[in-house]
Length: 148
Length: 388
Image 1 (spheres, chains in turn purple, orange):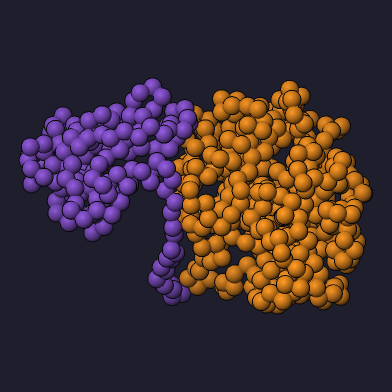
Image 2 (tube, rainbow over the protein chains, first blue to last red; image 1 turned 90 degrees about the vertical axis):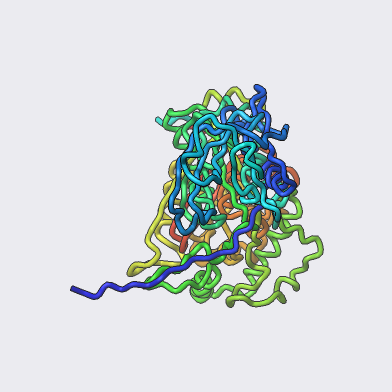
């Protein structure tokens, strides 16, 4: 049988992005330490926000502040985290519906173990001290009243 | 018989180096919305959406058509994506038209786009592959030897390419959507611009642009109901071939000739030069204008460069104006570039091309090619309904 050739292939290009008026505002909000959602024509609020309505395709423009507290809708536990995870310690991943929003967002749950998590519990944002306008400025969520 | 199909509306963004004010969804939305406005229809009137763009690696967004569904009003509707390298804008319009011609949908929105400012177009087009047998020379490096082959065959004078580039940049000044607006450019400056891959000079190449182009297509009843002039499709064709096989004619590929024969036969056109009033062909490097004029049968083999030299392809005084919009040489958002040719052809027969309108244009020809001159898309549109 012929020898099978093997070569590493690393493709790397310097992509750039223009985030536009909605995603750009959301990321700027994170840098400032606030979470923004966007109001739909029927009054419900999407968080994270989108530029166009997911049902009607109407342009959305009314940004509203949501959170920082919210409700844990569902969760799982990750132990140990994979090498590319944003978190290096065992952690939860949850769907969190922030106060004022009608959709949940997925983010990390920074607690000691799965015993500390339950559906319907109140959680709140933990911010990084150094923020740059990135989803990871939001370090994760912790139980409300647990201290930041 | 296929359902008669018409271009009801066209929408374009201003082509420019960087659209730093809009996201990718925002960019496509702008073109789509303008096409709907031109067609005087709303999102609810659209039955399906067909999107085209160059490789996903350009912006690094995989399957962007899914990511753009909300921006294109495609939620709850059939949404599909076409990909045929640089010809994709043309192929996408042909696929979209076929959905109407087949009687499947009444109105279809089709759109091509590229945000080249977010990518690296020259090298993302041809990714290096382990143990591949082809060298990655970039588009200019690939096409220049083929152009020299054309020059050798036809004894074309050396500056024909510069004449094409200068003509298209003059045309661009009459199209507010065109990217390059070089008011003070002189022919001598084109000739003196740096030689990149002989015989292609810098000024004989296309720019990198951000932009999107959209078309609303409708069936015969929708065309009849339009309060504005529409462009009726008289023929639409696609062909492709391998980029390397024994006996391949790289200068005048078989797939190009076959595609042209098909589309002109559909349109019932026998004297191509006399019966077509305006031509929008895909010319990313200047010399491809005379090469395609020959391959498409607008003149005898070997005579393409003479049309250029005689001024026959100029908007002012030419009998076969080519790329009155300024062409790919003046605007190149790659995934949209083919559709721009198709859309501009439609604008001409609708009498809506503004300052670059060919007076009284009744039939026009839109063209795109891609890959190693392997993929072809063409359509012929007319001010009148096709009789067959």
